Length: 141
Image (cartoon, rainbow, N blue to C red; front, side, top):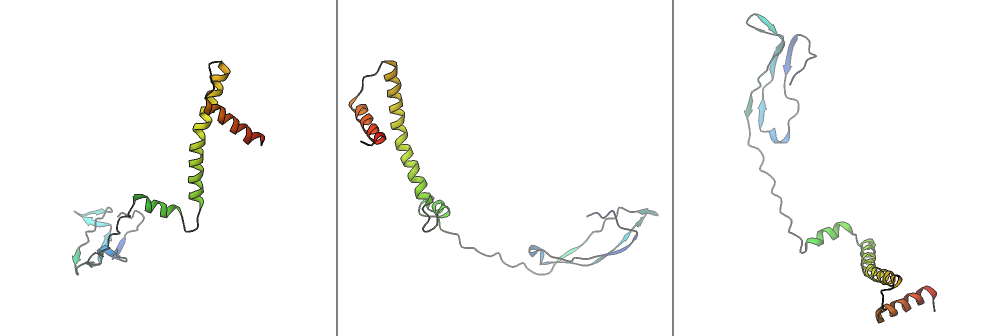
């Protein structure tokens, strides 16, 4: 660590906080002189070597019981998406199913209408039935 703003003096370097993983190590305080004298010259780039000593064994790691895998891979996902009494997922899935069922019918009716407009269409009984049903739904008869 560098401290470029320090004035020339003697500094006491000691440890103020200890990380949990390093509680077993002790470090003695050190006096550091800035500037230091090396070969009769003043050196402002001072390196302080701290020595650490092992004092105690670390606490054993906490054994966490592994969580059992869900019975189905989707159980965990569904549990995160929905809560008890929450019908948003059910409504959304229902709308997707309805849309997936209606889309092919609409595509087939549109394709038949295009063929009818081009003159290359012979109506099938299914087409006639769907047109009758659609017209009754729209008109209300």
